[in-house]
Length: 448
Image (cartoon, rainbow, N blue to C red):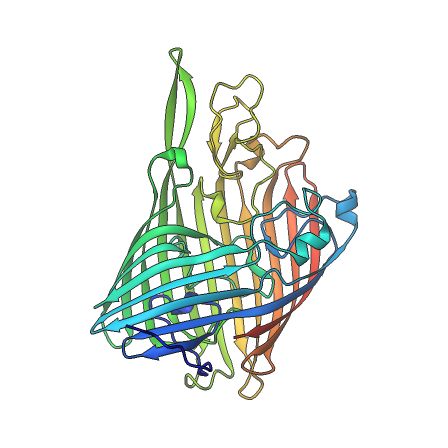
């Protein structure tokens, strides 16, 4: 079949498949549509302007520790202008009978590269950023079944639906946030016109290549569509969200070498975590065309061990097993990301890091005609056993991160959007020192 693209873009937003619609943060414009095939593109050009009262926190806040008071970084502020969060996406959708398929690729400019002072200068870091893959997946849906293969939001935390709504690039501390290569299967059952239950299982990229087995995630989500209200990302489409509760778990294996009987063997340790997420419309929307005067409460709670990689920028300032080996330790240095496990102070053994997190937020859409909404939220990440683990070099371990924020987002037009946010971040170090940072941010988006 020969495809001739139209000479001009057709206006309008093309809806995603139901199973992934709420996870998409950008509008999409149909490039070509004929019979059963549709090509689309989307994205936005963004400018993030923010000022912090300390140094060391970039566009993504996550669980970055606040610099300690009494240091230059802890007593001096920083102002950053950046367009690195700008992104674009391309995709194709097909529909043949009840079978619907989709392929989607999305990228931004927040790619992995040395930090300022670590091999690049400031101008190079902010003005010539590295392209980064966000999503790249194939999806097929038929009669309530969905199969997804590729890089997408992790099933743990049902992240496609429950990301916190900040103007700062998400996530806020204490929020599950990970896109990872995976094979996921979902089945949705509708029990009535107003409720449904969805089961899902996923095999995802293992926390370590050396663990030998994938991460296994599973969950169940209950949705009650009788009450709906908009619940929107600051850079995303306005979509109605129903009352819902999702319970998910992740199961993974950590592996490291050790010496036993004069031989080096591989030891395996099973770890797991649990997450509960919810959305509760308090003031419902009148219709899909009238989002005014609506209010949504949402939140998340997690508990588990060995899953620190789900929380961006979390390290605890713990000794990195990849880069450091305590003197006198047996051969047990694994290849694993910092913050997943650490060396015990008592005997140098490797121990999974235990984490407990929560976050909650309220989003209010102003009355019709104002085309704006406000969100307030708070979150916490705590690591109860971090105090028993070794620090990275001369740093001090931190075992608790807290954050709170308030923002306002306004649409000047369907394409142009502006967000204003104040955020407070706090870090508690195990030597009883506390540090805090205040951030004021303005972000603009041109969405296409």
